[in-house]
Length: 470
Image (cartoon, rainbow, N blue to C red; front, side, top):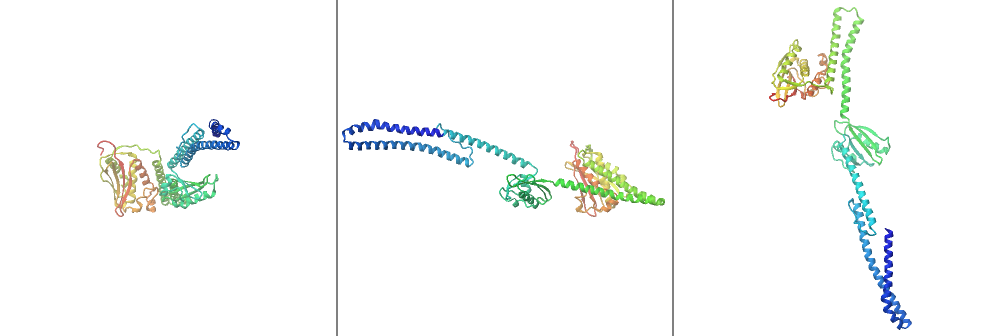
C-alpha cells in the first residue's frame, strides 16, 4: 500500500511540474516575451518576476485544489475505518468495509477477512459455551465457580435449585449459600491457589434440610475455585440402613444363642440333673433354636422380596376367593388361641395377584394381629372394591397402636414394645416383607388404629383389566 500511495503522490508532483512548465511555455512566455524585449533591463526583470510569481500562484492554487480533493477522499476512507473499528469494538462482528479498487482496497479487504474470522471464532466460542452450559445444567451434581475474591463466576441449574434462589454472577457466594462446610471448602481451595493436588473435600448437611452433599472444591488455573456438590443422601441412608440391619440381626441372634449356650453348658456341667430339669432346659433350647430358625427364614424371605430379581406369577383371581382362602387356610393359627378368624365379606372383582405371595401376606398380617390383638378375641379379614383397585383389610380388636408408630411399623426390626415382641417370638420382619410384596404387586399398604379399639392393616391390589371384572 505504501508503494502505491508513494507512486500516486510522485505522479501528482510530476503532473504539477508539467502543468507549471506548460503554463510557462504556452501562456506566460508568449504573453510577456515581446514586452520584455521592448522594455529596458530593469523593467524587464520586474516583469519576469511578476510572471514567475503569478505562475507559481496559479500552480499552488491548482495543487491546493487537488490536495483538498485527495485529502477529502482519504479522510472519508479513514472515517470509514474508524467507524468499522468502533463497530468491531462494540461487538458488531458483522460490520464490513466497502472495498474499492484503489490504494486502500488491500487493507480494507484484509480487515474484512479478519472481521469474518473473528466473527467465526466468537461464534464457535459461543457454541462451545452453550454446549458447556447445557452439559453442566444436565448434570445431577451442583456446580459453582467463584473468583479469587469469592464472587460467583457462574453456576448450573442444579446449584440454583439447591440454593433456593437466583444466584447472580458477580455477587459474593456467601449471599446465596450459608452452609459453613461448603464455604469452608471453597475458602480452602482459594487459599491453596492453583495447585494440582489442591482438591478439598467436605460434607454439607445444612444446605438443604434432610439432604447430605459431598463437596469437592478445587482451585482453577486462572484463579478462583470450582466446587462440585454430589447428593449422597440415598447412599448415606442405604449405608445407615445396612449398619442398622447388621446390628439388629446380630442382636436378634445373640439373645437366643446366649440362652442356648447357657442351658447347654448347664446340662454338660450337671449330667446328673433329673429328667424333669433336663426336659425343661431342652424345651428352652428348642424354643430358642426355633426362634433362630424363624429369623433365618424371615431374613431369606426379605432378601428375596427385596432382590431386583424378585418375580411374581401374577394371574387374575377373585378377591372373594383370596379372602376365603386366607380365612380357611390360616384357621389353624388361631385354633388353640381362643381367637375367632372370620370373613368380613369381599367382592367378586378380579385382581392381579400371585397366590403364593398373597398367602405370605395374609399369613404375616393374621399372625401379627394374633400376637398383638389377641385380647380382642376376634380377627376379621375382608375386602371392598374401589376405583381401579380392591382394598383388603385385616382387622383386630386389641389395644391398638399409637399414632406415632403407624408410619414406622413397616420398617425392618421396628417394634413398638420390644420386650413383648421377643416374648411372643416375633422377628420384626413380617410387616417389612408384606410391604415389599404388596408394592411388587403395584399396590399400597398402610395401617389405621385407635388406641383401645384395635388396629386395621390395609393394602390394595389393582383390578384385572378385563371387561366386567368387578
